[in-house]
Image (cartoon, rainbow, N blue to C red; front, side, top):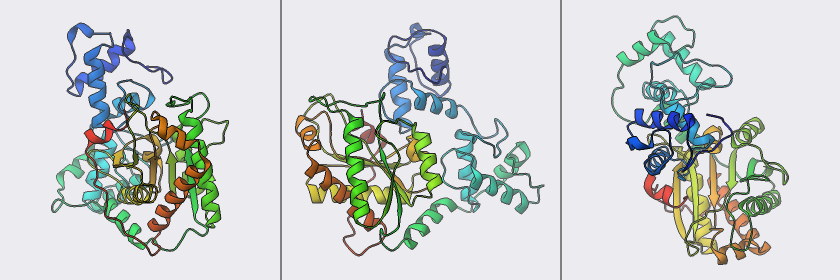
Length: 377
């Protein structure tokens, strides 16, 4: 399938058959008469797959969904895993990370990306079991890994490390490098409101307001998207990683077929088996300020697996303060005062994340995959 194409209802041909084959192997049921045609059962299967993988649920096979379909086809032992550039990705990598973490070898976040930390964990495991250490998780290493069993269920090494880092985090915003992202961009406007405001434009204005607010609090914010640029999410994540940002905040706007839909939600990195504790904490704190300070309806914080959240090496959240498709909320987004209020609430949440004295909000519950995706369709 071409990396630039997006498939949906009505598409036909070999790329559709490829998608259908991958879905069938994963256990999704498709109508036989749809072979090679993107029909209703194929769309239903794609939606179910997206929900299971905590992607944005739209029933379309774009770059993110296609990449996840490819990654889902790998199981641990299918191929040798090792550190290379670009990094290997797949469910086999995620399973390897989970095994290593539970055995006490810090493989990093269980994100399915074989990065440097995962490579070091493989090497450490090999040396600990008396193998020749080459950092390659091939057949012999996988066999040795499977022979060992964790003492019992519990958090893996990466989860414990993230929790410890969160407890150690203290101080304020002064000098802190904060990556600020404005979702979408030229050529990719995102959703549009009834008054014609695009998600790309509204998110950029919110991001600019947050940058100004953070500077006023002596932080060091960096805007990842210029007004006339539209870098891919993976490139934005790489830029934040190169900056050594303490955390990342990205603005998007929600949308819905019902123009009455309203409210604020936040998102942090998570899959069905693992989620970022610091990311969830940051998402909860920001949402608490948005709902309590501005009176926005609380649509909760949710785990999701967008490339931006998955590929960043620091706590990262996406914020959707409003529904752009709601005429009243679209109008509020056009008001500079409201945007400054949003920025102030987000900055308050960030300060609380850094451990400044203040309210410790009751955590917003982590929503189930079904409720999370319902608010993003």
